[in-house]
Image 1 (cartoon, rainbow, N blue to C red):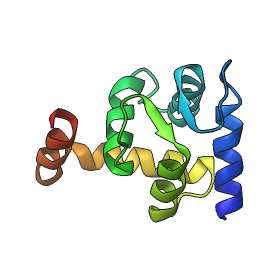
Image 2 (cartoon, rainbow, N blue to C red):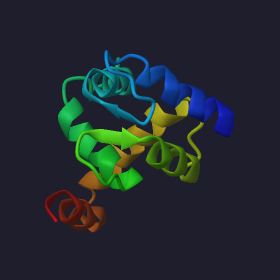
Image 3 (cartoon, helix red, strand yellow):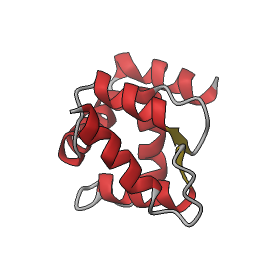
Image 4 (tube, one colour):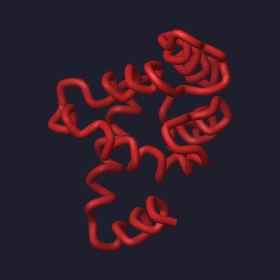
Length: 111
């Protein structure tokens, strides 16, 4: 499972023109977010969806997902392929809108 998750990370890193194999950022992150939200009602809200994803993965750098953050975050949430990531992100989106979760999400975004 971890190998499949790592290969998915490497696939998206390679989508960028300056693939450095250490983080998804720029066009590689854009491609990942496009695929995560493809054919869903979230398709035109990728920036907001990224904030929710950043919150749930506890990303340390804005608009960047490091390999360790990717591996640890998605593994912790039981996401080992794109379908599982898409399902999780949809659930995280719904969770962020709930009153009991919104304050934690808000604090993460604006801290």
